[in-house]
Image (tube, rainbow, N blue to C red; front, side, top):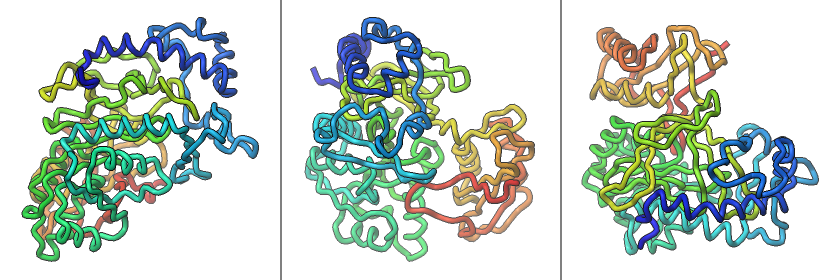
Length: 434
């Protein structure tokens, strides 16, 4: 039986033994986890118990890993393999300071490639297809996706970020069937082409594989991208410290399938209380990950800060793993008079108002805090050629109130006013906050 078709409850049973082995490995090789688990009275794999008791063990936070780094431990005290066994070291972008380093042994790298191959294979991407991508993947974990494309047998055309003209020339001359980029960039490419009289809807591209940010699963943003390109949009999602492309959507577009089975275990938790939430249809919560077969820098109950909505049960494609839609990042959450507001949800509601808006927005909080006093300022860019209309602003404001229960102050600006990006869009602009 294909691994993706193994019943999910059977997969959980298969994971039991490897989880216990992984805990034993952590206690023997990771100074970070020896100290962390000893602090809660767990000094052996037997004491930790099985997956049924996983929720009793402490979470791992990104800040803890950063704090464990020093001159003697540049990767962190969670490094659990000798550097002589490490064959690749990725890094984060370092936007909050010194980059975090992510080492992989040869076995870890093979496992990551397996996960990413499952994820992108779910989309229908197949050997012999040509795919153009915009990932600047060199130092970052997205580089594993390049290995996965080779494993699938795709003719990969890496263009990288920052050169739209080069990318569109590749689309015109090399006739790729697939495009890999962020959803924001897919939208921008369609705008860029329209401004130059190019019709991307008649291009060779029939698949757009988006990742890197929420958006690809937003119904209205997806509709706009698919309509502009005349192509099917599927999305993938991963997290650098655990594995790239852990979730990948199939052509039925019913959510991203979990692609890390047998290698990574996931939980769903309440982001405020930390309590476990049952994995069932419609459940919402934050994803928490535990490595099952990792050697270089394995993590236990790592908080992702990705908030998702869950779907379970076999898909028409035959895959049995649970599926998710990403609602947003819990660390991007704004609270307006007790109402939780995710920026991507604001964009989705605004896009529903129709062709009068471009789909590009900017939320500009008044204070640099999670809690905001109403009204929340939202800048909405109009579609090309549309004039500002107070009635439209009022309709958008009312729709946000009706669907998200949030009070906003909507300002309309001309098309092209808000910045575009060839990577991840920033929906929140803190420059106006006090």
